[in-house]
Image (cartoon, rainbow, N blue to C red; front, side, top):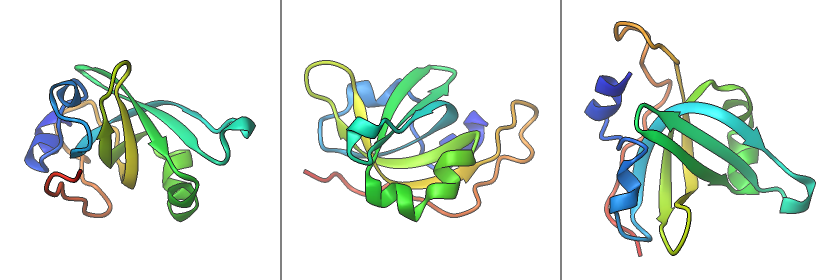
Length: 123
């Protein structure tokens, strides 16, 4: 899976810790859990994991409704995000998600169902 993510320009989960706040990044990994607490005003929280670590992903209410099926059911995601790297845990504010096949084997079945490409820095 990592080779395919690297080819698409996706950073390892540990990568954003070295990147400036406000930068748009692309990451991919297995979804370890999802939370949509009633007190969060419709915000959904995801954790992505790869071989380098875990990362918090915040999905707005609008993104959740646009990509509800993908966010709720995909075992792995490719996520384009805006990095929030200010004092404390690193959070990614998702602006697009793409379903991934979770294949821990030899590299087949790792194709995304739609295309996401990283873009330039946004501040």
